[in-house]
Image (cartoon, rainbow, N blue to C red; front, side, top):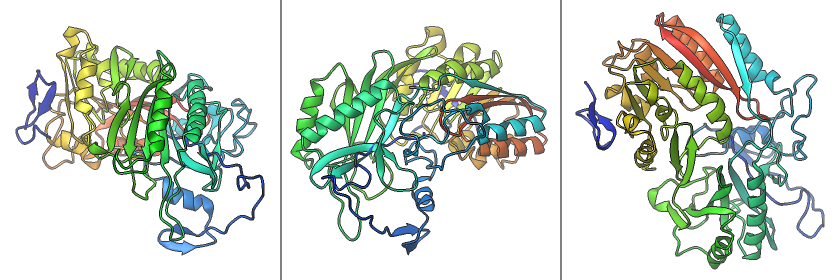
Length: 488
């Protein structure tokens, strides 16, 4: 089966089918306070772990069970970890919220964290040195998702991150990894929303229904002009059913055009930890442009609020993209799976004869945004890029790897789909990739990368050539890796 190329729409298809972070939270309730300064005894919590209701549940198990699902563009709250203890740790972050906030787990010696040591050990065992790069340690996060709760029964709002070992959200107004514009915007929004009578969301508990207006917010900084794209996740099923407080809030925010890029609302009424409702009709632009524009490398990309965006775009652009570009072989047909908006693919087309990108779209307009990004390339390049809204499994089964000399993958933390692994190891029943010479694996989940590199090497089809590690998220025990494997 082979792909047909449609240059007008930059899509590729088979005859069978043509149509086809770690997140931050903000909460404002003073610990141990009822809202009037009077302390009250802590309530006994009843938590549900693996279907068993119990009052003696370990709060860490509760958080991990409920919140640590996947790194997925469906946007669930990310991994809630206990602090990582690094010997002789230096407090490089100097963050006043570290002891309470669960967002960062290490304060310094970032190149000595447990996951870094694990990565060094693994690549050394394979005879490959791991180079490490760190961009900057402070104010790198330009994209955040934050939870909202009521300050007290008398009003007020809290935006914040969960306190370590609890479901209580703690405010982090002086977060040292947030871009300064995010800290400013959060405080402005908290003050204005409180003045407009917006109520923080409270989920169903003890037989009582959920109540309140504002569940979550998302903020993304436009790097060039330092304006903030704002998403309000509202506890309503339509604009008509929203409280009058929403109209008051939007009117006030619109008057601050030097701070805000745009305001979008997401209607979400389900009692769940999933942040967004991704139904197409659940999104409504209230003011401003529908997409945030970012120049990344050789192209300009357009980020709607519902699409995945790197939390540290500066480091990704300056460190990861050049590493991938170096790894791509000259004058080869390139295929990219898990491509998102094509940030990587559009930045390597100048070295390639053709670039075919794909990703699971789920009606989020990825193909349209890809085409807009491709239109910002030089004319000689824009005619050699294609996109199809397909999952990785669908793409390989419909012929995306046919004729490709280089495969780029940038999967979620769980790693590659089994169909992709089967093709790479020549185990797929109906698909093969005989022309494939190089695999460039961009990893955000080292455990999956390690496991899959071992499988590929043991298959006898691939050998590890090089590895580069990047500390994109200083403060967390995380490594982003670009590993290069060549066909044996």
